[in-house]
Length: 434
Image (tube, rainbow, N blue to C red):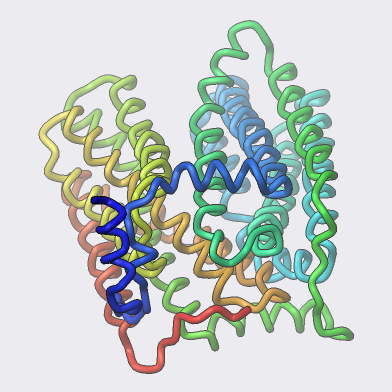
């Protein structure tokens, strides 16, 4: 019976437009995609190496973030010092994104990733042994963050060289599931290690994790891409920015993603106020609600690995709507349990956004410019997040957390609507650049 149903599906017209994209019934048949993801990891050694290296590195990265935040808070006792640490680690590297992306398009991407991981390990060892005063610590953390900003575009741009184009979505799902699982595990591991190790010890564990990641990456093949010779670094940077602006589908993805982030990134701060001021709940309750996004992320990647595939632009829009609507309805939550459920839905949407944007960029960008596009993309997200922190903070003070959630989430849903309209516009071609 099932075989007859499959044959009937195969006889249906191959193409069906969805948000201006041609999809196929064959691509949408219910299949056990999880087994295909696992098979891809099992059979594709280089992808398995990259995934494992990212898990090891991200776990260590989360260790150092939690440990340094606690160290700065305990030594200085000032929230502004912790805020400065986060700002240096997250926002400052985004200002260099037009240049950091150039590196992975000019040099062997494997060598770039190995050098970045090794250098981050050395910097963390220096921090661990010296525990310097705040200005020097911020400089070292900022330098390490810049190295991370170089690594991420190189790792994302490497994926199309490791898998066939038809497997890009599954490969990005596998990478996202591994990295985000590590991001969730990292803080808990830090809490466990800090019970019997001091700050230096945990930071040294993190330094070792970067060393292990670099050793794993040695097993990758060389990942050179052909590029135009003789151009200056700044000319390459301009070309990377121009690629997003000239390529209309890329521009839609970039503006839509940054728009949603600018609308909704204030949610972590708003959750704290909602829990403490509105629900009159404890700090642990706030932590539980904040952790809901991580649980939703992991569930989202698992669902993406098991459910029928959508076109990537449809998946992106679905992610925008779920993540924004999760915030919008959190403003109407009546307690900790309902806020937890709604923030879990937000996490589901973020997982869809992660897989969709990575796959679209890899498909729509010429191979010799992929690193620059990813670099500029993540730089734009950093700027959008900073805008959200500033504007959302002012909005929180003016109208409170409930209305802030509803207004910011509603604005995110409207941004998703714009992406739908723009995606269906005349002349928008969602075809592979390769």
